[in-house]
Amino acid sequence: PTIYVITPTYARLVQKAELTRLSHTFLHVPQLHWIVVEDSPSPTQLVRNFLAVCGLTYTHLHMLTPKDRKLQEGDPHWLKPRGAEQRNEGLRWLREKAPAAAADGGNALAFENAVVYFADDDNTYSLQLFEEMRYTKKVSVWPVGLVGAMKFERPVVENGKVVRFHTGWRPNRPFPIDMAGFAVSLNLVLANPDACFDGNAEMGFLESSFLQNLVTMEELEPKADMCTKVLVWHTRTEKPKMKREEALIKQGLGSDPNVEV
Ligand code: UGA
Ligand code: MN
Image 1 (cartoon, rainbow, N blue to C red):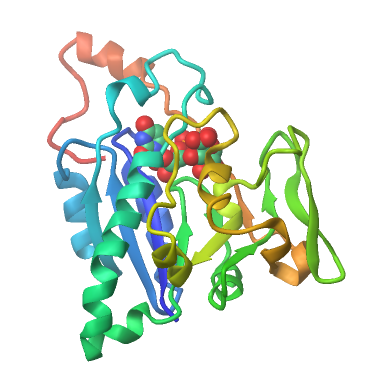
Image 2: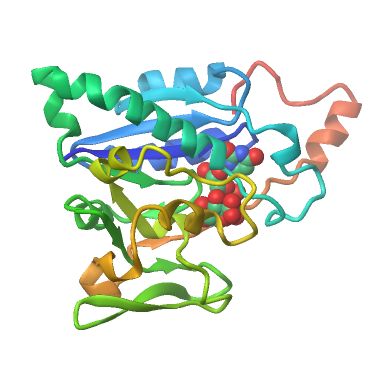
């Protein structure tokens, strides 16, 4: 089965570095279709050019986060959900394309039993993770490392079933799972045409806003050796300092703006 990976991304100094690192992971994964959704009013040249040479099968979309839903300079990073509108745009594309593909013999295979995964551009993904998620019936789950101010968060499995969640914060949320910790079958997405991410969700409830319309805890499929292995890490990239750059710009000696970083 094909894995459709939906990645929200936005322009910033580290964007091309993040996309480069991510693409180098995905290049090792068979049958992966990358849906890159830019948080921008139109597709950018940087991402367009990058995708054209990245070597992956991809779809390039864009969806601007409305201003009132977007973090403003100086806001703490957790104040508003990030990537919600972009993931929804990826889901919209899949729902639009799937029926046409199913009708077309050659393309039908790509959608049959396909899996959808939401991969942020800054996390770290092991290759084994993709083989774990590839055979997902409804929703599969696994641990996520370095998240929630803990070594890892994970679903707790007893007798092959998820019975609760190991998390340090509000364990009674419907699904206290980071975005990186689950994958959904495309069939389930298609069977629930209204399931999407709530861009107004309270902090920590973005994943729940989507999953609670799709499954129950009892139905979750534990992967990664019954959720005992960490195969994905919620790493976050440091914002590069530009103090010297700014000083040089004042002297008219800034780095050549024609060089793409
Ligand atoms: C955590 C989760 O890991 C995210 O999946 C979740 O969306 C987020 O919290 C949340 O609560 O909204 P965190 O590392 O804090 O993630 O978020 P980012 O990595 O900064 O953003 C998540 C994704 O959205 C990234 O792929 C990023 O490129 C994208 N993003 C971020 C945008 O498209 N626009 C933005 O303005 C900011
Ligand atoms: Mn992140």
